[in-house]
Image (cartoon, rainbow, N blue to C red; front, side, top):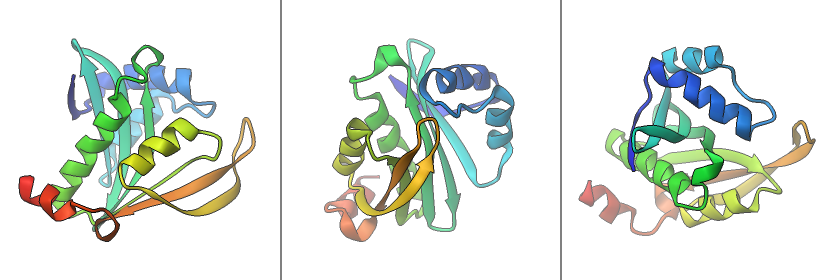
Amino acid sequence: MIARKANEEDAARIAEIERAVFSDAWSEDAVRETMCQKTAEIYVAEDRKTIVGYIVIYTVLDESEVVRIAVDAGFRERGTGGFLLDTVISEGALKGTAVWHLEVRKSNMAARALYQKKGFRDVGIRKGFYDNPKEDAVLMTRSLETVSGVQEERDRL
């Protein structure tokens, strides 16, 4: 599996995965618009030249937010989500990102466990944030100060 920055030709496949995963899926046009934003980056994971997952991040100064992360159903539980997170965190470390943020459905225990494994910690709740179905969001943050081994990680890069 490889990770790379997404390009315009990837928008249709990203939107296809969006529709399969999210109740509030982004359209292909919305994916393309996001690609044009200065603060946005989209990375895709490919297996045998097929996009099997993606991650969308926004970065401002030394802070980044994971806005979307999704994996095709046939490639879940194979480490794809963790691979994408590792990719953007490593790239962010090279660019000086010190803090990462994200929000996740309170009931999405698999995603929350992955984020915790990657150094994210619960920092708050947004009541009723998600629709379809209505649900709270758990706010999570990962900072260089709270992750052990970060200096070793930076040195390795």
